[in-house]
Image (spheres, rainbow over the protein chains, first blue to last red):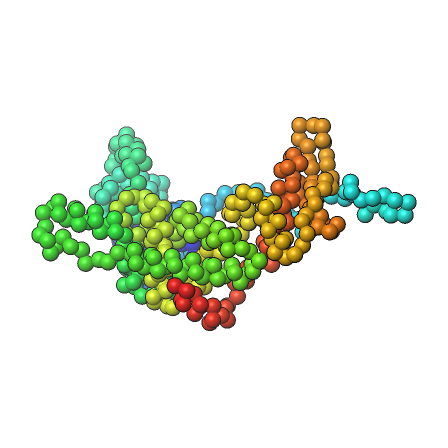
Length: 132
Length: 329
């Protein structure tokens, strides 16, 4: 069954800084809806007073990856989009995919090896019998 | 320009600030002291933070146990009885360590005794149900497989490594209460089986059966039967199987061979019963090839080949199967 890989989202922002305005609007308007639509993600909202680090959205995944996304000077809708994007990701590292194709069944009738179409030693080759 | 510079500064060092102060704070960032301004001190504190020993998630900031447990039940898409689930995460080693700590702090006897129950009973019930259900699944899916093979498969699926791997990827290691960190695999196994037991008590055997099926059986994908089941003498086993079906003993013959006089020969040995081919297997020496041919024949007989039908995960209509599972408990 499908298990959402996002475990928890921590919204760290400051209640007075100017670039955290989008984060504050998100908390006021859209955070509850987001939490209701994604009941398997725990949303922590932790405002830290005073001049602190930039507002950040920290996502923790089931395989232990922690991803920080800056939300400084982003609007509330952008933060919602970002949060849904994080919620639909898995926790695998974001690296370059070497090939855009992959198959679990590389061969349907069996992979060719040098003996595939060679007849077996045991087939008797009489005057009328053809080796199969 | 001053505001712009400050904004840039803030965006430039989002992670370093307050980082070295985060040790041991169970509240949110609101009590973190302001970030250091000395560059060398910041570097030292960052080094300290990176070299600190790993801590449990429950000791780091932003942790709400009840919310996490609710999220866990939603993630797995099952309705749990939350009290049962909370008892399922409590391990006996945690209770002992907590009581010892309280006794050391000098509390009187009433306060020492914790009001928590352990998960051993739930774990046992979960294990019995999981084993019975998996045995039933395999008996239904591979009717030819003998009892020892089914036992080997079930033992593999309920083994410590597999269960603790599944538990780790479901974040059970964050929710368990146990004495050591990181939680050892047998603790994780016990906790996961206790979770299954709690689900059994809350939702009944059908839902629990679906849960066990959805999380354990995909672990068999890509695995070969004889990787899981150690068979010492496949030829002897094959002879037994053939006598059960009244087929004559197989005759091994070399079908193909390559590079006989080299360091890496390849022999294909075929097993023929009544001059019809049963199976063919490759190997480096003739003996190895014969053993491999016997294994291939056994796989064909038991229906566990690579090109068998994949497992059926559709909604079960087996009310009978679930009842059999409970009655065999």
